[in-house]
Image 1 (cartoon, rainbow, N blue to C red):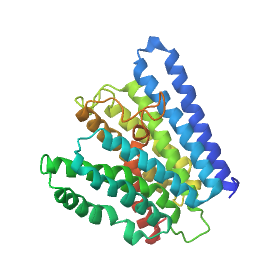
Image 2: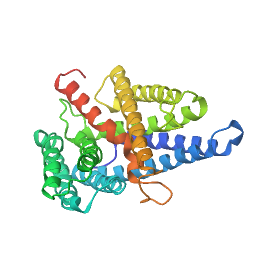
Image 3: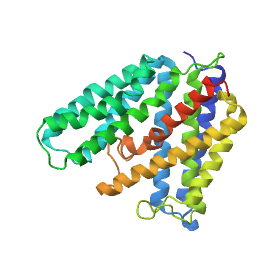
Image 4: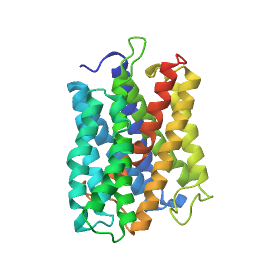
Length: 316
């Protein structure tokens, strides 16, 4: 494929959004007098840099093929699951279960996505893997912290593999017109990036009322609502790159923003529980992969299913 037509403009828009976010981040870093916490500004800049890398990887996948994009997300998923499992309690008896999780269920999920077998991949993990995991752990004969170990592995598989697999699954959605589903994936990424950036900016400029102080001292209602509003406006402005009408695009962008924020808050709660700051250090100075894609993991399956419903009901 080549980047032309709507794809060219949406990639250009994505680059403009990231450029604007980069400029804002650098300005905040230099404005110590407004009282912005330098650590939080640095987190904003790290997140923006990671989006630059994700955009570059997405462009490569677009230029090669849809299968390459699915494979890319499969690798991201594998590494995110590794980071999640590394931070959670498992025992030697779980190793064979983890072998199945990493080398059977994870690649099988993305293979089914690549071959567009929705009826199978939509239930593979929440039904079959979730039944297999506790049975396989029981077969190992180690009952200590049994429920905690089962739940930990199931949660990691659900968030890092099942949820993330719905991002490349958007490429298989069928539209009645000549609409290219890759544009839908790009629309989704732009809104997530826009939402992430403005959540941070609004939190730092206006944030006063914390949502969950015990979990995060940075996430505020002002940041949540500010990011939601900016994402909605961005979605409306980019409706031409989506299969939605302008009001629908705004509502879908608000949905992406809300779910992405919930993803960040949820993953922060897990990190607080484990007593760590980041999920990993794969990218030097950029935290872990899971730190960078938490909002995607939560927003992708919801956005996919709502879009599929609207399209199949001819409501777009």
